[in-house]
Length: 443
Image (cartoon, rainbow, N blue to C red; front, side, top):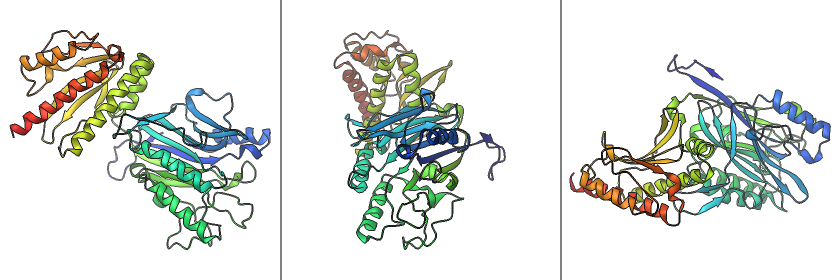
C-alpha cells in the first residue's frame, strides 16, 4: 500500500506495512479454534507478516509465503514466519557468514523450532529479515533465551543483520513475578537481546497501547503492554515482545494489541507493529539478496552458492581493509537491472569523488564479466591488464577472451572445481592491494 503524504515532501512516495507476533497456543486449542485462528490472521489481523509461535501451518497455505519448523518430541508444533500479502515472498535463512570468518553459522539454533529466521521481500521497500522466537521452557526459559541470543549473534554480523524485525513469546515476564532474582534475570536477558542492536518497539512507536496498570516493574517510564493471560495473575502481563533494528524502529508509527481474542483463540494477544517508510528507487531494491534469489531461479543453486561465496569474500576483504586503517570500501556491491537482467558489481570505492577501481561483475544468468574496459591505475595499461588476464587463464578450466579494452565473460560454474574459487579471489585480492599501494604512493 502506498500514499503520497509526507510532512517534508508532499510528492514523496511512501509505503505502509505491518509485522506482528502471536503465540497461537496450538496445543491447547480445538480443531475449530485453530481454523478460526488462521481465518483471523488472514482476514482480521491486518498484518502483512506474522511471526508465530506454538503454531502449525495449514496445508493450503502457499509454500512461497511461509517458513516453519516444528520443535518435535512432545511438541508437534513450532515457530513460523508467514506472509499474508500475496506480493510478499518468504525464504528461510538457514546459515549465515560473518565478516570475520568463512565459517557458516546455522540459524536453526540450539533448540530447532524455537527460532526461525527468514528473509522477506516487500515490494518497493526491499528485504527485511524476520526472526520468530519461542522461549521454550526447559525447566528455565531463561537458559533457552540466552542460548537463542547467542545463536543470533552471527546473524547481526552478517549481511542479513542491518534490517531486522524480531518478535515472539520470550517467556520473560517482569510484570508479574514477585521473585527479585527472576526479575533481575529477566531484565538482564532483555538487555542482552537489545545489545544485538535492537530497540523495543513499545518505546519507539509513535502510537502505542496503554501500559499495564500498576505494573510492578518500578521503572520511571513503563512501556510494558498487556499481552498474556497469566493463569496466576489478576491482570494481563507481558511475555510477548517486538523489536527492530534502529532504522526500522524509527519508522514504527503504531503498535497495536488485539485483546479481543484472548481466551477465545489463544491465551496470548497478537502484537502488530505498523511501519511507514519511503519507497526505494527501483534500482535500490536490487540488493545482493535479491540478486542471489534471481540467480538461484535463473542459473541454479550451484551458481548461486558460488556467487554467495564471492559476496562473502567481498565483505571479508572490506573488513580486512577497514581493520588496516584504510579509508576505502569494498562492500557497496551495487546491483542493478541491465536489459531486464539483475547484475551485481564488485567495486573498490575511494574516499574522494569519482574514485573507483573496477574489478568484475556477476550476472544472474551465471556469468562473470571482467571489467578491463573501465579499470583505473595501476591497471590502466594493456600490459598490466594482460598480466591480470594471464593470471585468470592459469586457473584450471577458465578461458577469458583477450579483450583487454572490453568486458570478456566466462561461466561462473567454471570456478566450481577444487581451489579454483580461491585462486580467483586471490587474484582480485592482490589486484585490490596493488591498487591501494599505487594510490598511497601517488597521493
